[in-house]
Amino acid sequence: MGPVVIFDKSALQGLNMDESVWFEVFFSANIVPLFYVETLADLEKDMPPDRSAESLVGMLAAKTPADAQPSVHHRQLILAEFAGYQVPMTGVGVIAEGEARQQPDGKRGLHVGVSAEAEALARWRETNFSELERLGARSWRSELAEHDNSPLVEGLAPMLPDGISNLEQLKAFIDSFCETDDPQVFALALQVLGVPEDQAGGARHRWDAAGRPPLDEFLPYAVHVFKVELLFYLGAGRGFISGERSSNKVDMAYLYYLPFCMVFTSGDRLHQRTAPLFMRPDQSFLGAQELKEAMRELDDHYEELPDAIKERGAMVFARWPPADLDNTLTRLWDSHMPQDWREHARRAESTFADPIDYEAGRKTFADLEEELASAQPVCEEVAGAVDADPDYVVIKRWVPATKGRWRIVPPGAEASPED
Image (cartoon, rainbow, N blue to C red):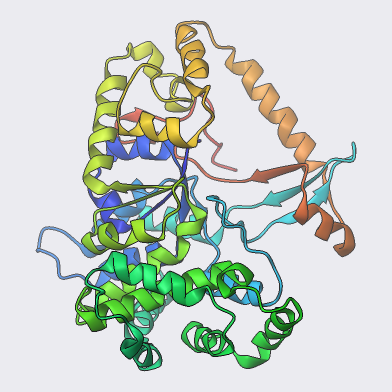
């Protein structure tokens, strides 16, 4: 529970295993597809004799929040928007798959199982990698790094005012350029985004029928990605961004997913310079060093708790951040979470020493599992309505019982070996 966060590899690399516990507990992680590719790409790293690339990737996978939600690929979202689907750009992730079901009492909800990405991370923690994953990651990363849209956008370079001298001014020009009803800009966006004409025809007709509203209002997500591309190529042309480093093109791809988070955290210098240009006023950029300092402060705070409290598990004693702590994490909660969260935290802290009926908790969980298991799949017509407005959403995740030196779940909550 916490602000929705997108992170890159550098953010996790800066945390030790104990600090990563609090990153998992106090944020709701949205993992972008590129993170998996970057993580697997480390299998190709040259390592010293006393350490393997497999152990490096396994350690990074272990630090990754186990309850993270994998993001839908940006290309799928672009094509969906061109097909008429409204892509929500509200700071939350887009759930890729879910089965619409109805309970006997009439409640209808989406049931989301353990994702293939989550299963892969679980294997990687055990340094178990398939050859297909190795080859696929290498190919995907190379394809992204080598994909070159510069010939498509170089025609825009003469249009840039001479006074543009930094990325901020360039972004302002790009924003103005995309506030247009010019069919030529529409056509350029199709080319840069790689949208086939046969899949763009419907959107073009709808745009014409609507009186050609500004392109960034009609296709907001597609234009967001278009702007990221323009900033990279035009910025490289002006010398604001190094176009020689293929990693820069890869790093810019994280920005495609900014509409689906409240917080973006990274230690990458290019991200520090570019991400804030694409973030709304209600979003926050968090440097990797700031993240580490905040997580270390939390780790030190909870270390002072009595052992009897710590043995209950972080899910019990850390449902909210410390009520009276003032640091980067609590200020992010002040900005992005309900304003009364500190009141809830104080009430929870006042009951830390109270006895806990673990058996009652297990029974409640068993009853909930039984209730959810009673839900049956619905027909396609009803499923559409459930997708649009579900009564509930249940997402199945595997969470480690312990991580670093910390217990995560309450005693006895571990799954049996048969589960």
